[in-house]
Image 1 (cartoon, rainbow, N blue to C red):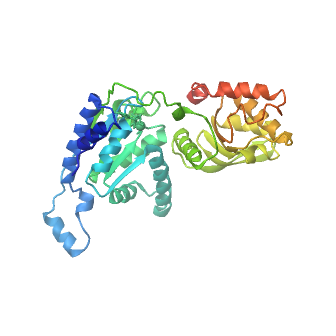
Image 2: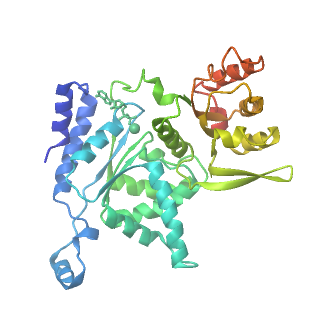
Image 3: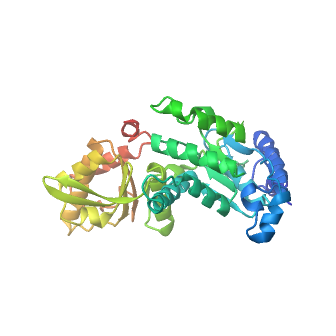
Length: 373
Ligand SMILES: Nc1ncnc2c1ncn2[C@@H]1O[C@H](COP(=O)(O)OP(=O)(O)O)[C@@H](O)[C@H]1O
Ligand SMILES: [Mg+2]
């Protein structure tokens, strides 16, 4: 087995990583866990079916699982990088590494399917846990978090069962275990879960000297150019992150007695193709309803503006005015930067205001007031 520390050192030597003492300490902890997991067999996977299986289970006592690792610290310190390093090396076949939002999205989906199958009054959690544990008994979560009471209730019960089945959990997070879902209504009911997590995982803080992400503004850009598959994927990730992985559904807003379809909505986020929002017969009332309902709008594929199609340009201007007034966060993919999307030579005077507003909306604090509400 190639231990994480060997790989870390090799990368330092190769110059792809800088030596960092705080990271080094964590890597050694991951080494330990690799070694423990190499000989660990969880209850859920140790028993085979059939006669031989039941015979084996007679002498095969389930082992005590090793504690997982909960890696906490501020952004850009290398938490995800270290967990990925561990994940690549750990000699476990049944392992999953996922972003926590994606996990939640899939879990809710499965939860509802199992609930329907189990009928009224049935509890799908035990089956859900078993299903998951059979798929993988080493679960690695990037950006572990608990966002609302629904997540808190689901996670508390699910993880209790997962741990009982011998599943080992590794996670990165910006929040200490003791601070998960605290100072909120329902927080007390969550306390037992915090206790379980603390028992099953070693919490360790990564105090790396440096924010390795600084100086890389592309991580925070909101106006992405051009409309490539890579930028679409970046918007997918933003969608998941801003919606906290909630299920995606169609929503219908009522605007002056009319139905306004929002095809892709989730939590506080709505996503549209530019042409479905600005090249159709919608007006300020629709945009206002949108801005009042959603805190984050994602707009895919803004083309360069054609001066012959003033309707589209005017609608876009109207949309920006409304989103600006309502402090909505806007993420887009576009064929050009917003200063160039409508050529200066063709541009009508009113668009200068749009540019100035868009400029302001790129600020990192834009929309944070909305987020808090
Ligand atoms: N020791 C290091 N030397 C060079 N780059 C690093 C180092 N540690 C982390 N990075 C890079 O810095 C960026 C941020 O690291 P990441 O693991 O995403 O941080 P976090 O998950 O703590 O926010 C990543 O691109 C990562 O590869
Ligand atoms: Mg990370």
